[in-house]
Image: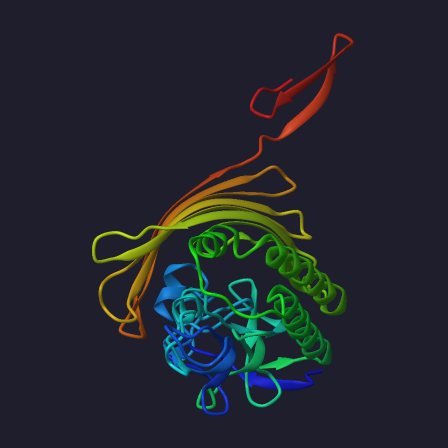
Length: 370
């Protein structure tokens, strides 16, 4: 039975911190000014489908399921990097770092409602906030303006508890990672650490420990969840992942990706392998290569994915599939220009019978009578 419910969050819905779009961020004055420390930051509203996060594979959205003609957010959705910020005072040397590694992430999901095989994300004021990047601790103050969406998903009490524990773990990890010291001027070492390692070794350690603990806690509480180890950032990183669903199916996957800036464009490439195991004995192993591009147009991007999979069952039947899929967003709105070409081939397992002839055991196909 549902404890509460939330509208789905479609691609064009705006997300923002409440009230007044304000959070707290680290501050280092340039050239002179107040002493370093936290300061007030105003964060710009951005759509659920935010093109920098879409390009860097941070957006988690439906592909074949939609509401009002638009995809909606799934568990683990993050608006992503490059969310515009303005700090007060404005002469903040750390502002580029704040925007380069920004985050506005869904913290709750309806584990009993799935789309494209993944739990549907949930955010609605005041009970189900999003997590917003902040200093010295990540703040659960973000929300999606989705009240006009007529499709709602129900969350159980376990879903709410698991989401709250995830928020608490993220806040503790961010506080410990901040070092609780005085902010300093960003330097080359810090930039490289955050781009290639996701932060300092101390920061990565705390975030990994609490992130894995939150994932395990959700699995134990709801029977559905993801345990992921993030090595690096979304600009360049590697992510082994274990995901389990309430129906008992589980997925083992790993992906590696890198941002690929080019002339007048930014983009990323992601290679992944995923193995899905169903309680029925069906196994689907998929290898894919995704290429994302963001042209020099505000909030526009596309992702083209080339995938090849093998589906096997207990009887030994194998189905091979190859596909090419394109999903795009233009000027802040998802365009229904996704196209898929697919080739499917099925191999039936040979029927085998065992017989005896002349005292020796035979294993022959039905096509060759004994």
